[in-house]
Length: 280
Image 1 (tube, rainbow, N blue to C red):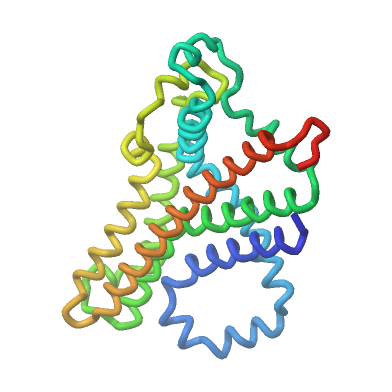
Image 2: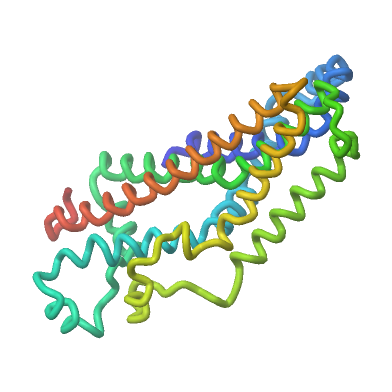
């Protein structure tokens, strides 16, 4: 991947996090817009880009951690669903046990990066889109909640809890993501694709068995919608913000899931349809 492309991804993620942190104070920031412009002019655009890049690095890793179990489910589905088709019968499948790694992703990735330039460019293309879609899927619920709150404060919506300190609401979001991390980072690891117990995971839809991976973002989206419904009579923009953010988050989550599957199939096909010399 080109350095500029990698830099851009981290910068965009960094600015997303900065937006989440700043939006609760939208009315105050608007009133101080001239002062902010002066500070930005003094600091300079390059410093702002550098700050966004530095912030983007750890939060990109956080997004990867929070979706790790769903990512593992995607890998398991591919291993059991696509590769099982290589065997002509269930007996042949059973007799292959103890089986080799059903989807050796690390080996496939290294082999893919040794191939011709267009193959490597395609790999980088998929990985770049995965990273950006993953970030929007993970931080979309926080952005939706904070943006809904910001619009409600901007409109001066007569909702009692909206008048609480923005710092409190930002703390709620931070606490929610800490809970999310505690839920997904546990000793209950999903099997790797070279472990026999992977067979026990067959036929388990990710959305049904991975409640821990999506319950926190769902609650944030529901809280945003509830805030919008509370203000719907006099301030419909609040509800539109909540619904728009929820739709964007769901779309990005679906996009991440689909691109991840496409990327893994691409790795597999590169290996399957290449000659022994490594040429595509």
